[in-house]
Image 1 (cartoon, rainbow, N blue to C red):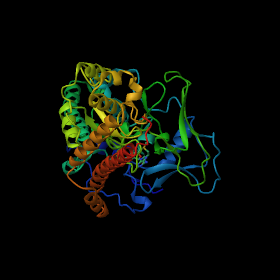
Image 2 (spheres, rainbow, N blue to C red; image 1 turned 135 degrees about the vertical axis):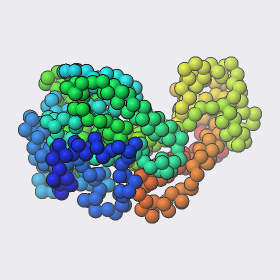
Image 3 (cartoon, rainbow, N blue to C red; image 1 turned 120 degrees about the vertical axis):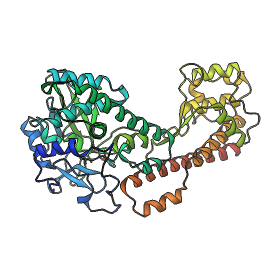
Image 4 (spheres, protein in one colour; image 1 turned 180 degrees about the vertical axis):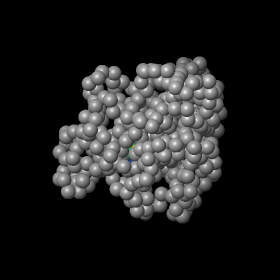
Length: 484
Ligand SMILES: C[S@@+](CC[C@H](N)C(=O)[O-])C[C@H]1O[C@@H](n2cnc3c(N)ncnc32)[C@H](O)[C@@H]1O
């Protein structure tokens, strides 16, 4: 593999982080392209000082194991990845592929000195949901050291990430999806504020206690560290996120051929982390792990990629009586009553956590359930006029789309038509049509535009798939094929 920064010394590469990322969340992403038919050598983001063979040697020297048939290779669309070599034969299922002793994972540790204590104080200011920033601080601490134990690992990390906090403003707008825009804005805002807190805190810390060896840290370097952690860390048994050298070179698949196993407690000295072949791994095949069964929002926000045909992708909606009244009226449902439910309906909505204090109003359309069970149950219950008919059913039945018309075909048809109308409303929130998105993608736009457009296109595909599915169900209802 070509060494992208062959001439860079650790010192030079470290210095680069803290002196070139002075613009807020700047990156070269907007100019770089990931062409749809690009050659393998252009796919991966540039590395701090790319030398995967040294990384593998370091892991082995420190008591780890990398299966001799494995290589770090450039994947045309996924960046670097771990693959079985073309010539060493298949790897049988059950074989250990990679093994790391407990000292190789990089994670937040109990303070071992004043600098660590300052780092922990900074980490404590980060909200739990941004756990990646806490681990990122630890990564920055090691990146700043001239003699870090983890340098062979850090050297091979990407210099840039394709997560939306680094998108140019135009491409953030291009996402056209409010829940994700909200998350991106929240993260950008956090980074700007946290930069101030870090600078304030470190302003009074003596050099010997400085967690970043006296180097300046700004929102861009914090963003780099947070993205490195969110896109590469694993949470195993202990739920403590860790960066796992070499293991974090494995790319994602929903049908993975390998899995991670943690042996021993996270704090015990004999803890180890292994990747084990889940199936036979053919020569030349990529070793893949499942990062989780999540919607594309998660993959784009934390990992910087968008999956086509993601079975877990969904549209997020706010459960809102006025919106539901509008949708059901558009669907021709007579006298909808969503904004003023009767007392017995309020009770059921409370049980669904859609009413009262502490209600969780986010509901989803799409994914394996097609329609969020809570939304479906609420629609069925609010459309049904007869409390007795509803009381005969438990919540599980009311929440299941597979339960054929539990409250009768008329209620079911109205509920499904209301969801169809919600889908139409959701589609209208996008400013572009699928065909326009496809035309933009054909023009091979810059990488960040490509990601934003593919993201919104996939959301529209989810909505259309749900509409098709519900259309089929309505047709069957009208043909009276359901057992009522
Ligand atoms: C844990 S790292 C895997 C190694 C990474 N490819 C690299 O070059 O270092 C996760 C990153 O790999 C890329 N990636 C992994 N699986 C992918 C997939 N299925 N599709 C697209 N990109 C993927 C994304 O850039 C993601 O942030």
